[in-house]
Length: 165
Image (cartoon, rainbow, N blue to C red; front, side):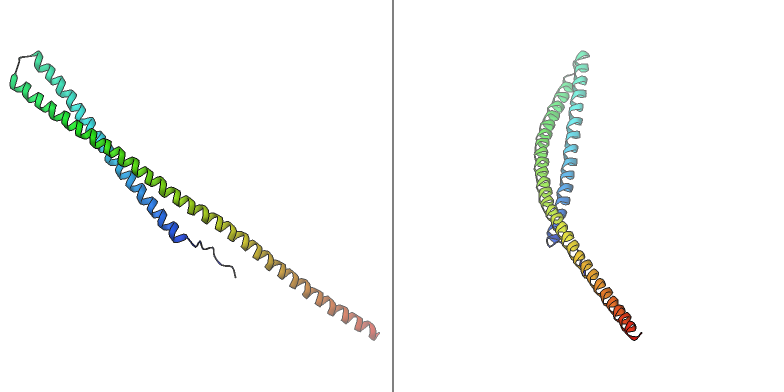
């Protein structure tokens, strides 16, 4: 009776495949967060550029001290926000790199088990081919022996009829 192939480490492979999938999802999440921080940083830098342009225009016109103080305070606020954003971006890049390493490790562990599975499946197929060949040989031998017995009976019958004549 032919049995289906069963990899003895299949549960471990399934677990590691699941871990790989989770690691990839976490990497994607961290990359989205990093992109959001980068977009925020770009927005803050654009805002700072617009503020500086506005500051220059105010200086060309009348000298309005309260407006200049407000613009300078807002510029300092934007610079501090940019600094914090850059720090967050650096941390985010570090987290993304760490997660890439985790994804790579989970991929390697899955690949090792997949290779073992492929090797075990190949060995199983070879064993099945040998078993099938033995079965075919046995069936062929039985058919041959049955034919020989039938031929022997026919020969005996012919000989017996030849003796009667």
